[in-house]
Image 1 (cartoon, rainbow, N blue to C red):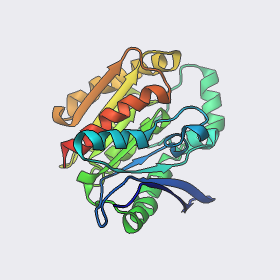
Image 2: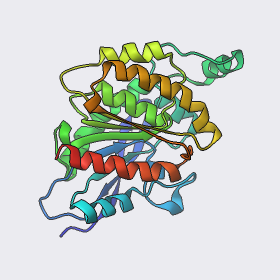
Image 3: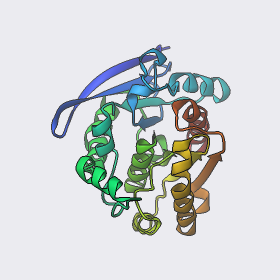
Image 4: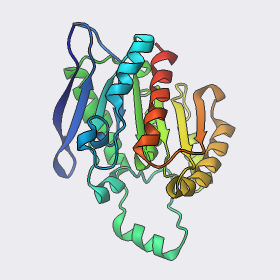
Length: 266
């Protein structure tokens, strides 16, 4: 039996020296390979003592799922720990034009938010994923590969999951910041990504604090539009009235997402 561990990896990232990625490998048999979940905000996934804003406790979630079902997964956490840079790299520009609630928001976004989500997506697909599959005990193929994130990371998970349906069988879209795009643009973009393979969208939002309440209306409209064109069997929408915009609320939702991923396809 090989004991669990976390391995730090640094990989080349466009326009910077490198990017820290942390890989959690749970306890497993020698020569055993496991499904893999790629996640944004790797700085908040594992050890509570080093998390600035809160911890997802993904290691504990994996152990708990293994105790219940005998299934587990490798977690690949990509660091997005510089606030202004995080906003840029987790915001794709190809979903649609930005919309702004007021002039000040337009000015602030124009000055500080240069969307680079497509660059991040390319890093995942062409740099990170090949490296992980070559160097860690992960299964290959879309049925064994998922993506997950929250807030801006939820938006990025939405984008990357749908942009790469042949790569990811499931995307955890938690509290996504979709209010920057019109519902029509979101619907049209999703329509353009419909292929034979449909990424299962696990979409979640709460309503328990101001930030989640701000995200909720756009989330609700986006979900209604997506339901018109997306297969019902490939979509799960979860709304928790007491859910906050915080890791403490995303933690239990992740457990449900993890269970669905590990039991749905394998």
